[in-house]
Image 1 (cartoon, rainbow, N blue to C red):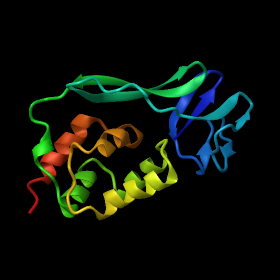
Image 2: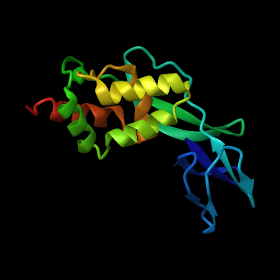
Image 3: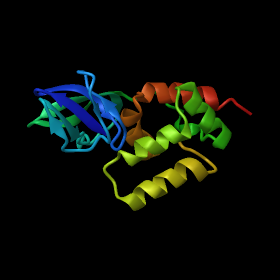
Image 4: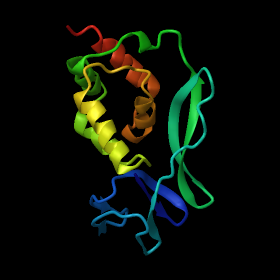
Length: 168
């Protein structure tokens, strides 16, 4: 994921590398790539949040902030509620329905995986897990890592998960 920075201010923090991006002045950058700069605008890779999630907490929101001049994901945390749906694995149909409930598709998840700071092999395996698993567990670390790049919160995922578990 790239951030568009204009004069030390983040203008957009969710630009997909390799895609077309429109600048606030109406110009386009094709393709969007880390390191591009012109007329006070620049594209930089958003660095991941490296802070461990505290015990008993989950990511509530993620924002992108300039830290030492680099766009960096910064998370806020909330207590994990007692009704987190970790006891309800979903099948493929239920999982795809849960994605639909929050306005996403498997393709959106694959796009978010491509933006994670992991190796190409790890990206391929993550995509296989999303596409070809028989059961999906809410407590899989992949879902926590993908929430921010997909623009959803843990609470939204939980709600969609609980809604989808009843599909038979």
